[in-house]
Length: 154
Image (cartoon, rainbow, N blue to C red; front, side, top):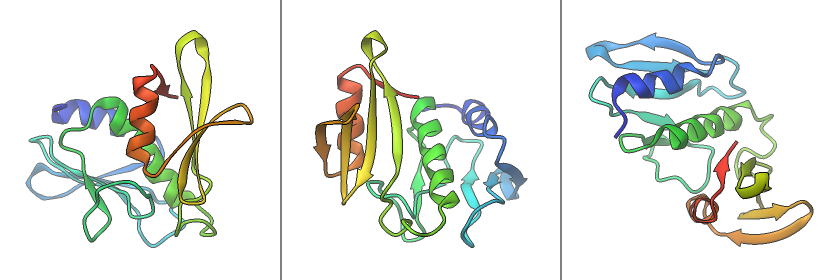
């Protein structure tokens, strides 16, 4: 588990987020440019390292009834990726927010080979250029595949 200070450094690397201190040493981070009423991206980051990220518009995450995913055991890279996806989902014009269609990530691998991961038609598809390489039912499966193949998210 990343300590509080490291999680805070990752979160603060997003200039579009505004820090809001709350009770008991906890910290929230707001995305004021959100296209939705929801503005909190990071909720109750606690000095013990526990906290939550809003994933209510993102498929494939284990979230509670408020759309929050616990980040206690997230690595720095996974946390960065999750926050980026959360901000992207809140930046949507609302046309695809219900399904998340159109979400796209670029992954870099061995020999600087780039793959693109796109959520479309309720599947996570991996493309090499215009060619479909693989399809997965969840983001977690796609991410695991990419990591096993030696790729990391850009």
